[in-house]
Length: 221
Image (cartoon, rainbow, N blue to C red; front, side):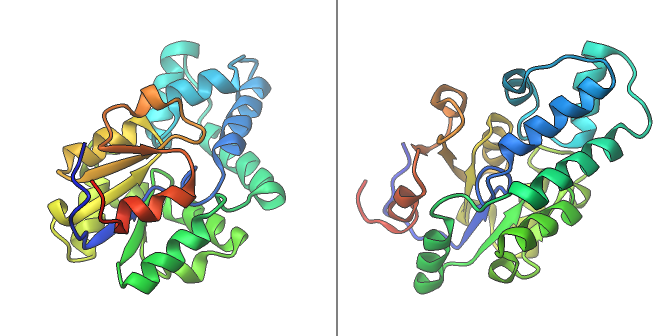
């Protein structure tokens, strides 16, 4: 376990499932998109095999299972997802309080998401959090290689002017935890929806956003 007697210089949040409660919607959108193509894949299998990855990685994984996908697969999925998010997307419970406490402590934060920047902004605007992050968000197009490669987290840290070893990442996917460690960063695993065993290599686990400020700002080991 990481010692919590340290002052981080930057908190990097994953977006989907950490800031916005989009993971169930993303899984449902993928299920619907595949079903329209005649492919059956449960939302549990989608979570297990695709969570935390880019659409580029998703296509690779799915084509290994189902064979070639249409050229407009990503466009169809994204349109379905945007429709669901517009109707049903909510912020992750407690994230406002976390951001309030980070602001009060003067601890900078940003987002590094496997989704494209347009999707991140759409989600933040939909739930009313866009002003909290301003332009401090990075997406799939900002990294040559997606998670579990460290590129995205390193790009965010570099843009924020923070050394990797002074960053702490908040993630809810196994790929994200691997990416954070590959970047030389501490990572806290959010296990509200993700089975804790999938995040076991994280430096600390928590299941409720109410517990995150103590991990980020607390003094106890």
